[in-house]
Amino acid sequence: MNNVVAPVPHGVTDPMVSHPVLIRRIIWENDDTFTLTLDMGDWAGPFRFKPGQFNMVYVFGVGEAAISISSDPHKTNLLDHTIHRVGTVTTALAQKKRGDVIGLRGPYGSSWPIDAATGKDVCIVSGGIGLAPLRPVVYSLARQRDLYKRIIVLYGGRSPLDLLYRVELEKWANENGIETLVTVDRGDTSWKGHIGVVTGLFNYIKLDARETVVFVCGPEIMMRYTVDELGRRGVPPDQVFLSMERNMKCAVGFCGHCQFGPTFICKEGPVYPLPKIRPLMERKEL
Ligand SMILES: Cc1cc2nc3c(=O)[nH]c(=O)nc-3n(C[C@H](O)[C@H](O)[C@H](O)COP(=O)(O)OP(=O)(O)OC[C@H]3O[C@@H](n4cnc5c(N)ncnc54)[C@H](O)[C@@H]3O)c2cc1C
Image (cartoon, rainbow, N blue to C red; front, side, top):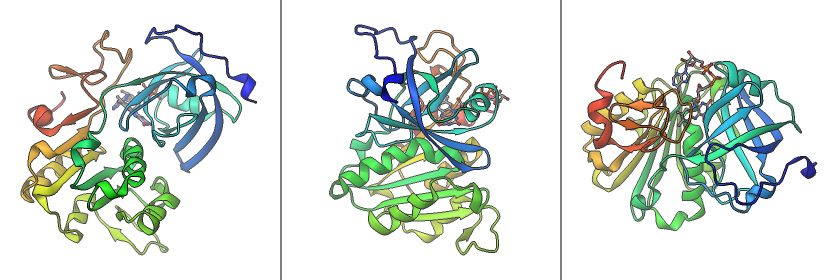
């Protein structure tokens, strides 16, 4: 099956050129979200990415979408992308089968500054599919567990069945010494965990505000409430980082589709320090 993946032509450096990659596995996380594991073939060697970066995923003849890489940065032979089916490209991706070939270019964008968390507590706050770009952070932190003090994952979903990576969430808590707290908007008869918004989970952990670096990704409304809560708890703004999303086309700073105030999310983002974007977050419809 490996032979299906075309070798990357040597010397191809054009950031607009898509490489063919093979779909090795498809896992449906919930009714409308799935994780594609892509076989990088010959591209696995030169390909490097940092947690928080994204690729442009191309369905031939349909179009491209920006999708965060959701797998372990140390394993580039197989790359995960967790995708929410919302429109043209993501619906076409949802119809793909194991063994199909799609196009990929990247990686693009800024990354979560994991080094800034060395010797400190790390708190990851995520909602819905926002856990996808943070999953590579968890893998990286767990790999060098001794470099950090507490590692806390706060995660919120709409319902128990909507939660991503359910098996892994338990593993993180049980095997990796990661404080993992999960909440849902609506429980079901089997749900024994927290109910309510993700910011409610701050009531169950005691943050050492000055010693904690926080990474946040989720719906914008959730990120705004999280930023307010962190402010109330005394976390310095320069220790808070957020990943932003806007409609994206070229991913290399030419087209301007992903403009966010004076910045382009594809170049300066998607991960920003809070002080850089706080004024922008307060302006509606930007
Ligand atoms: C840096 C970055 C990382 C991303 N990572 C992921 C990821 O890991 N998984 C994932 O599922 N999605 C991710 N997205 C979002 C994804 O790129 C969009 O949802 C994309 O437009 C889907 O393409 P489509 O053709 O299926 O939908 P379209 O047909 O383009 O759009 C469907 C609907 O969504 C709206 N829309 C499109 N893009 C966005 C956006 N970025 N924000 C809000 N509304 C939008 C459109 O206006 C339209 O109403 C990311 C976006 C960015 C910028």
